[in-house]
Image (cartoon, rainbow, N blue to C red):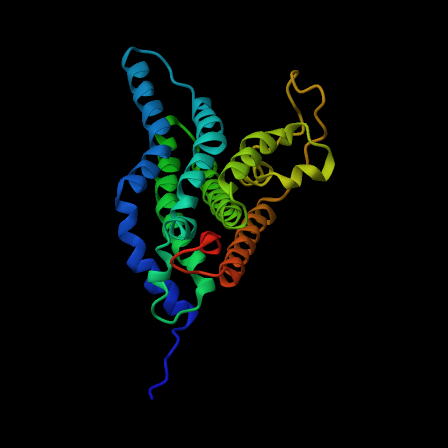
Length: 263
């Protein structure tokens, strides 16, 4: 009787990544790609029209596009779009058992599938960041902004994937956290600011400020985190979430039917 050989975790990651990669070229993948490109492309078009009429397009507009459109809105929406496309979708559709016909380390599947969507989304975030050069942004701000976008996307995608495995309405709870709690970074006291994604993203981008607007009367002193530490924090947090996803899936009974099969 021949002994079944279980592939290594890296072999599993590589096989799932390559096998699942064509999924990003479907509708969801192209919608994901269009999200960061839309505001940057629109801003570039507006700048061309303004300059063609003899006007001036301030480079400050590039920062507005980066912070108000990319960082605060579209990137979280990208994570919310991509997260359910991983293992959670397979559990709900009960197609995951078909992937487990061959022996493999089950705990590697969330990271393996998540890396596909991370790589695809990060690619277009980098393209969008590079497009800000045409709006007059400096090279340094573009590099820091690109790191902030990719780091934030990595952490939020892992976080939302984990919530999707732990909770029945994980995507909803994740959206509430990102869009309701995270923006409170300006008024959160002390170290509670470190519980927000935006604190680390803005620290990497170099836009953290000790001053706040007149509207933010309850604002506390804004904490400062060095860029390297902020980037490491997002990476480690994301890695911890992917590890927790693997642990959760490993302990979840997976079958073709039954309530437990749905997580």
